[in-house]
Image 1 (cartoon, rainbow, N blue to C red):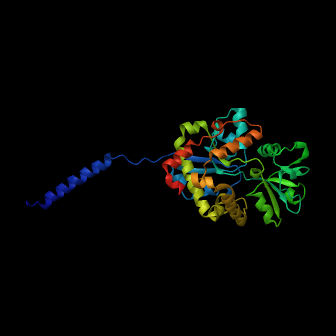
Image 2: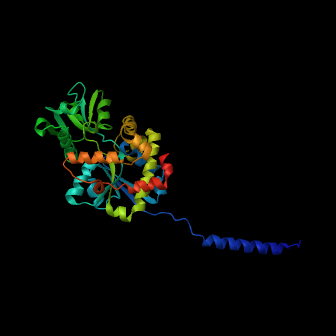
Image 3: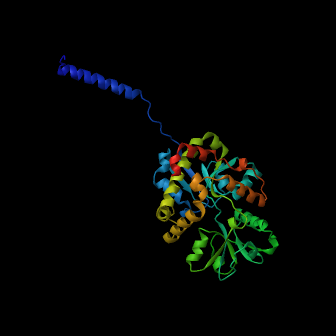
Amino acid sequence: MAKISISRRVALLAAATASTLALVGCAPAEETSDFGSLDVQFSWIKNAEFAGEFLADSNGYYEEEGFSSVNFIAGPTATAAVVLSGGALVGLSDAIAVTPVILEEEAPLKIIGATFQKSPFTILSLKDGANIETAQDLIGKRIGVQAGGNETLFDALLTANGIDASEVTKVPVEYDPSPLVNGEVDGFLAYITNESITVANLGFETTNLLFADAGLPFVAEAFIVTQDSIDNNREALKGFLRATIRGWKDSIADPEAGAKLAVEVYGADLGLDINKEIQQSEAQNELLIVTAETRANGLLTVSDALMAETLDTLATAGYDISADQLFDLSLLAEVYEENPELLD
C-alpha cells in the first residue's frame, strides 16, 4: 500500500472538512414557528380554573410552539367582543354566552374546543336553609342571579323545567356568595368548583342543583376564536391547542401544581387561599374535565353527543343554531391525528 505523507493527509483532511461544511451550509435549517405574542382572554379571575393554561405557560409549552410571550387577560368581561376586536387570539367562554353574539350580530366566531365537558353552573343553597335539590324546589324561592349571560342561563333553566318566571323571585347579585350566607337569598347561581367550595369552607353544609343534571347540559370554558384566525392563523391555533392539552395533562397528574401557580404567580395579587384553590383544581378535574369521552377522544374534545346536548340547551334558551355555525372541531382533530402521543 502506498504511503501518504503527513502533509498530504492534512490536505486531504482539510478538503474533506471543507466539503462537509459546505454540505452542512447547504442543508435547510429546521424551521421554527414564530407566532409572536399569545393573548388569551379568560372568563374569570386568574385562579385555579385555568390551571392547565398556567402550567402550559410555566412549563414552556407555548414557547415551544412558537409564541414569543404569553399574556393572560383576567375576566370577567365580554369575551366575544375582545376576540372580535383582535384583543385576544383565543377567549374562554361558554356556548350560552357566545351564541347570541353569533346569531344576533352575525359575528364570525367559532368554538374550537372546550375544557369543561360538563357545565359547572349550579344553584347553590344551604342544607339547613332552602335545601334546593330539584328544579321544582325553586318555586317560591329567592334566587340570586348575576346579570348578563348568567341571567339568560337561569331563565333557560326555568323554561327547561316548565317553571314560569313569575313563580321565582330573581334577586340581582354579584359573584360574592355572601347574600346566601346572610340569608338575603334562598339560592345562588354559582360554580360547583368555586363559590360552592367557598361556602362549604365557611362551615356550611351545602346543596347543589347542577344545571347539567336539571335539563341544561352544555360545554363550558370553551375556546372562542374568529373564523379569520381559523382560515389564516390555523397553525398558531393548533400550537395553542397542543400546548394547552399538555398543560391540562400536567394539571390532572398533579392538581396542586396549577393551584400553586394561581396563588403564587398568576393570581398573586388576589389573595387566593391555597387550600381552596387545590380543592377547586381537584374538583374540576374529577367533575368537569376528565370523562369517559375525553379518555377516549382526548382532552378539550367535544363529542357528537355532547354537541347535540349543547344545541338542545341553546334551543331551550331560545337560540336556534346549527353545529356548523357554532363549532369547528377540525383543528383539534388534526392536532390529535398529528400528535397521537397526546392521547396517552
